[in-house]
Image (cartoon, rainbow, N blue to C red; front, side):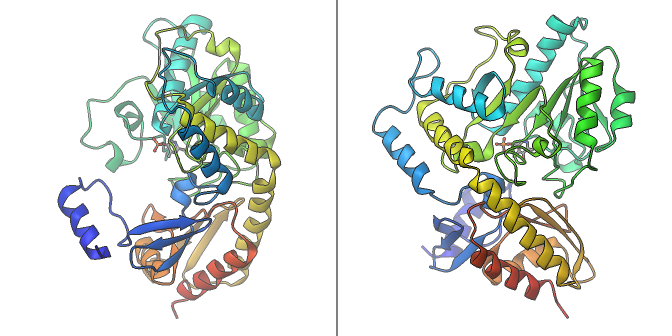
Length: 400
Ligand SMILES: *Cc1c(COP(=O)(O)O)cnc(C)c1O
């Protein structure tokens, strides 16, 4: 079948909950993907950072294949021989103690919310059913009913009520607003150290440190959703590392599964997790041996530090070259590591317009919030492949 025939099938038989670019991918290797007609593209989205190590990284594929020949699913009714080592390795990578594995990012967020509420009732002494979790304006934490209940995006939220109570939205990047919003009912502050879906938005330097100080002083759990910002993307293992801060709770996902299996995890301390007892929470596929075998290899790759180093080094090249080019269609560039949000001047077209032009030039990326082009290539990208991307970006973003 050709591309159009595939797209027709999707239009006919799939729910229309996405508006994908008109390209039908069939193969991928490293930073490159190929469509059904054999055309090659450089993947500058990396499945929203789920493919941080590139498509089909040989070590990850080897781990998956080896595990496929042993056992793939046991449920948590029994132990399996991958889960223990995975939990140990991930706890150590995070500098924490306890891991609760789930599958998708949204489930990880839901898990962290349950954890914070129960901790609030049992450890902080908040009266039953009165816990409040503070979240930020512009947040993206997933798509479940509870999570969209505290979204500030009308499209994500609209039409899905009634909504889950127990959340309060405060401005992002404003430590004073956080301090002012904390009452004796507040059990946690859930935030993204970098707001990815909002358009790669960074808080001011020092914000994460202030959040840490306030949460400690007020006995509120600092819950960092590092599903997209974590695991090397910004040039450090965690975005919180840029301010040498450890939150109380990490939520991880996306890249943890090596682009092969969905796996997410909530990572915290023994003490905080002591409120979760057998039967309180779980998932049939959570912690399955196939996903955890792959995730262990992901952790091994991260331990070398090579991906973080490459993200720092080539992220600087990306930012410096795009800035120096003074491209007429570019209003602002925000970036850290290999993660950039390029705000385009709508005088020349919106984000989608430029995304489609970049695609025609062999680069796949995705706009977010109308006028921001988000760049997040696999962290294994080489300098010459980045050069290819820069050449196309400079051409397309110079419409004169
Ligand atoms: C992608 C994402 C999620 C949701 O993950 P899913 O696997 O799509 O459910 C949550 N938080 C952040 C910051 C994300 O980027």
